[in-house]
Amino acid sequence: MTNVTIIGAQWGDEGKGKVVDWLASRADIVVRFQGGHNAGHTLVVGNETYKLSLLPSGLVRGKLGIIGNGVVIDPVALLAEIDRVTAQGLLVSPETLRIADNAILILPLHAAIDSAREAARGERKIGTTGRGIGPAYEDKVARRAIRVCDLAEPETLAAKLDELLLHHNTLLAGLGAPIFNKQDLLASLLALAPRILPYAEPVWERLAIAKRAGERILFEGAQAVMLDVDHGTYPFVTSSNTVAGTAASGSGVGPGTVGRVLGIAKAYCTRVGSGPFPTELHDETGRLLGERGHEFGTVTGRKRRCGWFDAALVRQAVKVGGIDGIALTKLDVLDGFAELKIGVGYLINGKSYKHLPAGMAAQAAAMPIYETLEGWSGSTRGARTWADLPAQAIKYVKHIEELIEAPVTLLSTSPERDDTILMQDPFAD
Image 1 (cartoon, helix red, strand yellow):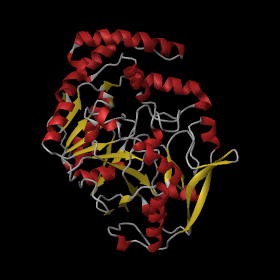
Image 2 (cartoon, helix red, strand yellow; image 1 turned 90 degrees about the horizontal axis):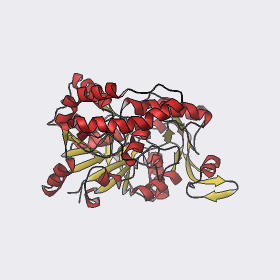
Image 3 (tube, one colour; image 1 turned 90 degrees about the vertical axis):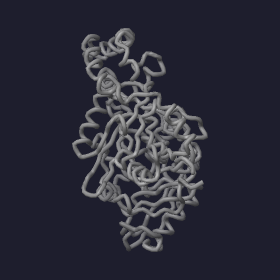
Image 4 (cartoon, one colour; image 1 turned 180 degrees about the vertical axis):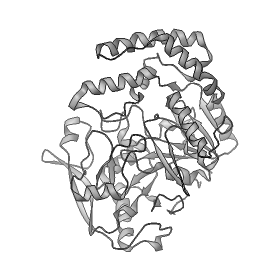
């Protein structure tokens, strides 16, 4: 048996939730290891739709869920999410959910500074969700953050708030935004403590025990490789590392525990927010992809930008993300197109590239180099075997494998959890 780590191989929103949910039936523990409530996974289970932001997707399968130390947690948002899914009949308790006691908390002031700075950028805005993710990670590396464990120590909490407010209130005042009162913040955090602390523990110890016992661990990433703060389209990225190596540091395990890495990619490409998107389509085809794929952000509801599959981008994600195999989702959205295009490289100021350069100006100037393939007239929706797929759809998938230099090991053909074709079991040794 081996563990499995799931990460996005594009700009997020690739359908990781469904794949995690599908694989969680064979896992013992599901771990979120980075990101915050700016990420979202939609799970369709029969007639019920669960929209998760912080909770590990495995909870829907009745598996133990762990929120690792690499996640930044808005306690108000977390409790609201727990209440919402509980009302849908999902059991969430300290027996089914554990939270790293050294995870960082997002406070209201983080969202305030996030929104104020984004507004100040004007046309140069990054496209953040305004939920305070970035400022919380900034406080983490600046060593002034409030952690889950601090909720159990009121004196520590009060002293840390002094330093935190000295920094953030100065920034907020400079941006013309309202400042925060220490006593109000302290009172609100102490009021939340009795509901949060029962979930808290050193999760690294639980994971070490699980590893020794041979339990299967599924590590669930948020966002995607091209939003990684180091390897993505900087500065239009998230504030954490989204590559597979972060599963280890973000949950307190050694790198060998990460196991096999499964990258999730759509059969086309989407992006939410600002930043470069070489294969983006602004025509009727782009509109049709968005309409068929129901391309709206799970968390923000923002309309996603849509375009053709960018094989050069995914190949890059495979290399830097440590991806062993690809789960290709939403193949059914491409049904009926007479022809399909795949981005195989970029033309930048008259020079061709097989990867997206790191420079901001170069990324903005990148024009796609396309290959054109014949589409298919039959339907792939709901297919569960290769025999159910049109010949041209199989050819499309096989050509993607060649271009990205990685096998497609799982194929998703609808939002339903069982409409999946498995070519290679990621949990197999």
